[in-house]
Length: 361
Image (cartoon, rainbow, N blue to C red; front, top):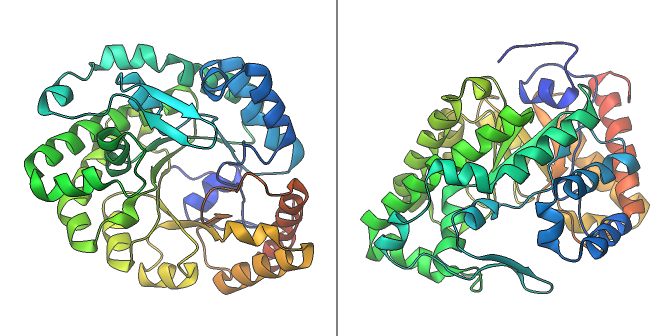
């Protein structure tokens, strides 16, 4: 990756370069904990109307940056946007979360998924949102584009999302392994392309969310999923605009052997949940990739001093090691007080500047 000391801190940290303080952004930072987001969603009429209207999605993307001095924006989209473009009937109902009304049931369904030209047209609203946001942000704050991992997408695409144990996907791994391999391969190609087109539109970081990766044991993950992820990286990097863009892989669950394989497979950074000590993972991997995370989001329900103490503890444990982007271990919860987020951001900036010898700017 091309270095640049004048680049935003997030990009420099993802390249494992020295930074004066640890950069920070928050998963789901554009979301329901913000009253302005709830108002924007009410005005739009529905989550999907908000998602599919680029001007509205741009506004929601920018809302948290107007409140807090965050170091990156993340495009307001959804990991199931691609499934929607496949024609699987994406809907979002309050209290239920995302659902797919027409999950993939047979080999014929898989073969009938639309081609790339149709997908590009169906997802044009995402790329337009990216372009609009980047125009507003300018060069100082990078935008993160994202997509689901092939396995996480399979969990929804095969079961519809109603069963959070994702029994059908987990069963087919063992009952119809050849079908699962073909499905994951197809998903990987489309996911890589979708992530790359967000980069083409202006995103400066791409992130793959493997939200349900922890459902798989290490052997199954290594045998079935890792080869597909390696090809996803290859497909993503085949786009000229994406060759030097940091590619982040977020996974819940897993352990050192999985993280080592992901780092060796070409991901520039790993986002980890709160069940891991970042400093131990860094040392286990020999610092070969950056790490993102991983404060427990429930910490934000504590009083201000508790938030300060827990954030400080995490930062001091990681110390001056390179390659850290501060984040939560999962998405921010919808009833968190935004005032707690302000405390977190202030703490991370001040404490990390002390640790790294820089200025909290």
